[in-house]
Image (cartoon, rainbow over all chains, first blue to last red):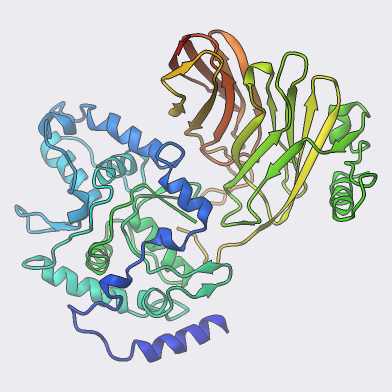
Length: 258
Length: 145
Length: 106
């Protein structure tokens, strides 16, 4: 009944699809997921020592300097003096050479396979989470600034469609909860706006670190919809739409979430 | 007497006014293993838990004991008990005069709403406790990610 | 097993200092199942201790009741310059250790 009511209310609100440049949640009302946490988890996220995600950030810092692959190169061999500050805030991003859209995980693996002669790291592996978290942490506090022009445009439109697509046994789209019902209660939780600015994040439900895609899969599982494989194009497009939707929100990686 | 009865009893006692009732039952086997039958009095120990936990997988907990922490008068150990976890004795912490201050902070797993009890053993052989209730909520969405 | 320790770099003799440790460990309860339905064997850090200049100042018995990636915070008196050394062991016998130095003045 709860979901039926929610779906009806959402259907009414979602009736007129907004044009691409109009955000369902205006910039002034954007709230990070941390705003929907209890005070304990918010404090834990802000505690740069006790935030458990920092264990992955530290591991990432070590991996950054560790040579890998046939060419015996480390990330730091090429990115010598260049800071990665600001990089994560611009992802997902079109790779100029291939014209493909990459999220940070994909970009790390592209570097590994094409430049380092190394095997790609598996999604949700400790190493990929660690490297992603380490790079994203360097953009702490910087506003999300993904670009949707040029070759990114088509991906953005596909992401927008994916966001608004009704899915699963509950027949809900992302928008039904995170645009139309944010701030309201669902059992003991408050529905968030569904922003990507704290990922990879340490989630208490997982008792470990996880990527944004793992979080998307959790939502899909929650509405009893099919979970797509990691790294699939639909997730990438959706990630770009989410970044645009969260434009201006500061990066919080590693976030702490319920 | 079962552990559950004991903890429920302790909880009941706490809900009533009067120092005479506010005692952990020393016959509980878990506590008896620690105290050897000595009384466990309410006081000196302060157990702080949130009233409501966002997630039972990680709940902040703080235990402080009112003690000068001198060689002559200090806390020897602090013992944490859950009334609903599959492993009731969650942790034991051993300290001494070199601690300077009897305070422990950690994060615990709690399998549902319950009352958590902390028992401290002092250097004079006495036992003291505090207990705190907590509501642990369940996640609203399924997660099989 | 990676770990982080936080203590002040410097203290005055006699100061009560805050000691924090965070260890990367799943604290596997033994009640969870993997993707194919098999029970995951219990594996928790069951003992943690801290020695200050070789003298034990803190020790803990831990169980599955302690959260994954365990966090413990306690206090100790700054006695002399030296190392705080943590050691721990899990159910599978894997040991970890980490140390941090403190300079004590006065």
